[in-house]
Length: 152
Image 1 (cartoon, rainbow, N blue to C red):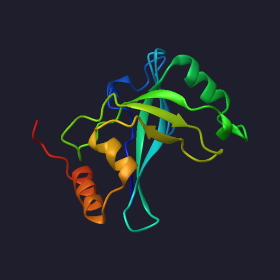
Image 2: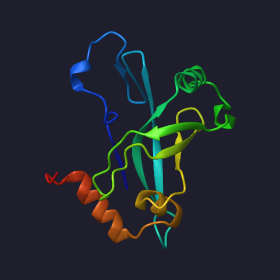
Image 3: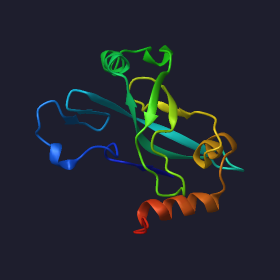
């Protein structure tokens, strides 16, 4: 009931070992200029208490990234105000791009990924976050993630 992307869509694997570039399971920095944090978009599943969780990356401002990093291991960090971010993960389960959707990144307790709240727009992903999805839709999403279309 969950899938995760290993890196932001804008990260080039050729950057490995380049000064100013890091990639961990939670944070990514590109050229000491672009800053990303990993979080979860949760889609409630209709008729159940379950959610489909999608591990995604958001770009943050340098100040917000530094603040999140400073508080990374600090108990009580979940009381921090949400950070503005841009979604930097492309999801193949949608006909419209998911890149650059506006988000609020809500810090969670230490050891838990931040919760990502999409701006309430008419984008299908934002609608599904608000309204929920069916089990059949979970299967469609899973299929798109496991076997992405080669059509461009």
